[in-house]
Length: 230
Length: 109
Image (cartoon, rainbow over all chains, first blue to last red; front, top):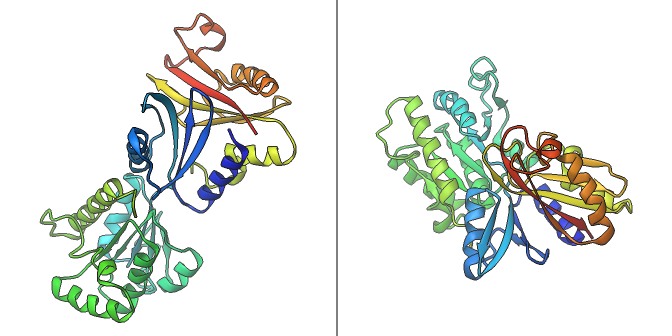
């Protein structure tokens, strides 16, 4: 293993960026592929599959044998709003393998009593996100219904390229939100990435069912995301 | 990243050891069959003095990998090692879980 490759890989991992270390098992040579880089041929499509699945594997490609060590940061979910939906979403997300954090400046909502065993921050989202910025391996769901709380983190999530950005609200509410986000300088393309109405269309009615719909939509976004030519 | 604690991460340790001027070999699980204790992609890093960090199994084959690593550090040539209950050496370095693994060991440098 080339020492410079290892150093570069460690930098990528520390920065929560995905990378695949490709080792040619016939001659021992290595190559580091960063997410978003595209490689031609059969090897390219297997590397792309690796980024998407997060699974390391020995593969045959273009007549050679390679080992792909896939380093993908663990997916995180940031929920804005310590509401009823979030109470159901938090344990479900954890079961599905996502690290979850709930942020809500309203202390009546963000109480440990309502959210036991969940990382809960009773602070304004802008303050939290300044300390712990969002990234491409983070999903953000804004569910407070309150523009004062939701708008800033939605903009931050779109700017950071979060793999999923969802916002609770009716079509009418969302139309108003779109106008506000445009005033904040976001482009139509960026705004169109927001999943709204939030959640897969499974006819969810109760807060718990909406949590299921949101979680399913997040997994869909994670596993089907574009990993090349971004 | 498997561990948020950098001090326990084998690849971070490998870089650090190398920076201290130690010879280092990196062993990686590249294939598993059946029930294997550590997933594909797991690392064990070994230095020239036989110190090691991380794991490629539940402790069953680390000893064998460490001794191979010493040779690999000496001649610089990577090697593919295979362990499993089907091995003739199973008694010494087999996997008690009944699985089989292939471990690629290479010198860092």
